[in-house]
Amino acid sequence: MTAIVRIALMAVLFFSVTRIAHAEYLIVSVSNHRVTVTPNYAGEELVLFGSVERNAKSLPEQTNYDIVVTVTGPRVDMVTRRKDRKLGIWVNTDSLEFAGVPTYLGIFSNRAIDAIAQPDGQRKQQLGLDNVVLPRRVGRNIVNVAAGDPFRVAFVRLREERDLYREQIGAVTFLTPTLFRTGIPLPAEVPIGTYNVDIKLLAGGQLVAKTETSFEIVKVGFEQFVANSARQHGFLYGLATALMALMTGWLGSVVFRRD
Image 1: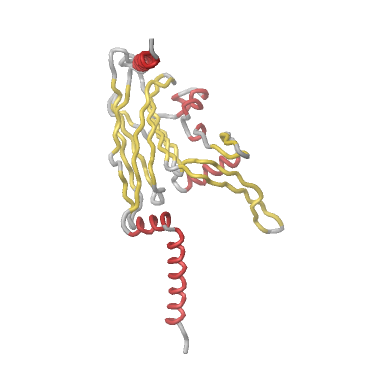
Image 2: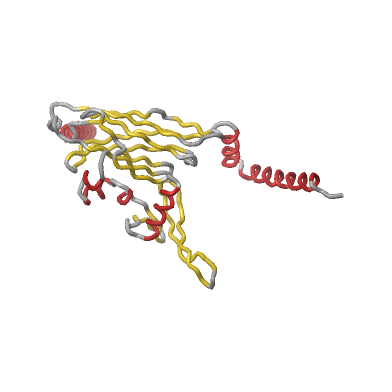
């Protein structure tokens, strides 16, 4: 048996097992796959619709399904600092660098995460803010920051205050036993980039099916021109900004000059 034939048979076996193990599958769609940010953008809410498709091997029709939707924005490195009061002055005394964490993180479920799965299942499937992996740099290594770590708690709290991190219980609504919807709120300062949407279907605390989709947030008009200029022509952008600042200062001195 040639290597190509063996690989083909293994692929057929893999997909056959996957199809049997996951009798249910999800079909989802987002109301808008491209959000444009204009000068007067004040935030908006996208709507995700989904359907649980079943076949002869699916769980019994009376099965109660759970849905957890996780939306992650572009990933960047961020630093959280701790300030202490010394000699009457607040100064930075310690810091923690997060590596490649989402700029936006939204978790939406039909009921409380603790009611959907046991702690082990929550951690395995990264259900809920406490179980999403937020890595940090330790020398050359990258490790997950524990849920109770003070820096992680402070980081998540600060992002929540800006509506950039959120966990909403009851945000997913089942319109029928197999048809569901949820809103995805986007704040006014929503980061630009591609957003991944991960949808998990669970039953009895076990993962039954999952799927993914995405949408994009882009700037248009003058804001997009400025952003592209700063990214693609950094030196010229900095030079133009410095000249504009000098011209503004000179014009101000002329206008408000006292003879």
